[in-house]
Image 1 (cartoon, rainbow, N blue to C red):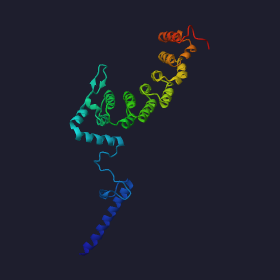
Image 2: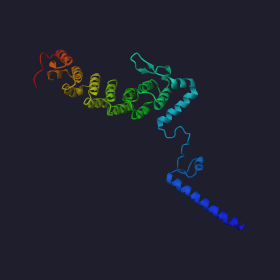
Image 3: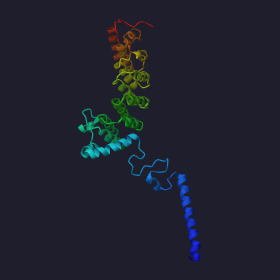
Image 4: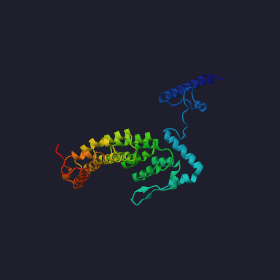
Length: 302
């Protein structure tokens, strides 16, 4: 080896050592793996193997991973039906609303396809609402996804539909959907939650939710809650309903009157003089209901 080689080789090795040290230092600072080849055999001791760049489950929630796997299986089993559901378009009904109509919507894997579309389609709110309604026709899993998507959905009408659809899920998911619905800033969604309770079997948790939301500040929500209380024969709500007879909103007074007439007709004997209410519908209903309950003439003075 020449004198020049004896000088250059150690120098080059020194430079290479410095470069390698810099890479290690940068990797430690950024949290990046120092050498990807170590992961090829299962990762470092005690460290999980990071997902491959093309891993479809990377960065996804459990339900997202499930629907991706479900869709892949569907494509392999019946690509024709899979493509048909991916391309299905809603029809306009007689009520001018949109609805997805297809026998394949009942397929267990249809829920995954429709959830994928709901996440990725840049569709108008009315189309997303129709997608949500169609998802409930499938016998596949969708409740966990619906609860997650509900918190991210910008359109109140779509969130309201989600609350309604979740009544077809298991009891826990239904309750979670109602709780989210009643916390929603939109009266449209809260009213949907109140109406949904009226379509379910009465139980203490639902009764408590409904009792609380009879006192909602929005009259639309109050009316929906009153109607559900009447449907469920929620006699424990009679005190709140009696208070609502003094509401400034005539529709709230009217619905409360009907509910009291069914749940606690004895209250009709001590309510304010609704037979002379400024609203004709309220006064007419008060006269009829008091007569049916056996109260003749004006109510007694308090």
